Length: 219
Image 1 (cartoon, rainbow, N blue to C red):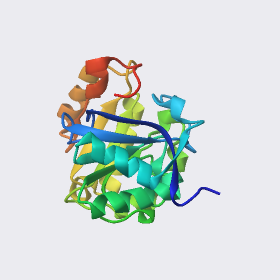
Image 2 (image 1 turned 60 degrees about the vertical axis):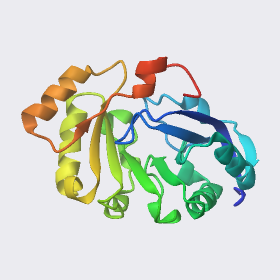
Image 3 (image 1 turned 60 degrees about the horizontal axis):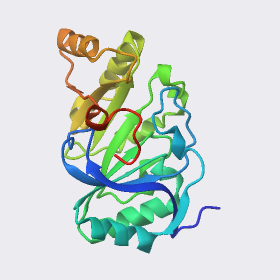
């Protein structure tokens, strides 16, 4: 049983935010260990196992020491650990700006409402589309929350358009993000589809991979 005050952490690091509308901003990352999903293209599979147990107080000390006011909880899967919700609440109490990136497998209601969600809706090519918890899309705040589709091919893209229309995500979120699977889908192709279909979305390229390469950890 996960401890409510102790988090399994893969890594803590201060870097440049690489994705979402916050891309380019300095950000302190808390990468939680473990994830129930196994997306075919996952670039952080090293977080699936292991992890260092850390008390919430220890993580808070590391965040404060960074001097950075933007914090992202990512993974792995933050929602898989009760202590991550405790950490998010503590961060909000101290007026940090808190982003939480999630695969959407668990209900967002487990976390305090003040966080900014970056919800990664799993497309069919990920192999995990059946794990999407669809009620989460109705939980989003149009002033601050974002959804992301990591697209491997044109079939993923068309599927994503259907989801955007069905759940009215252009109106329900701050931003709809399309990201090509790194090394599989040419960003120029995805850009052309978005422009052709006049999709109310942003194309995003993982900035951290452009800067440091796709295989480096802790960035």
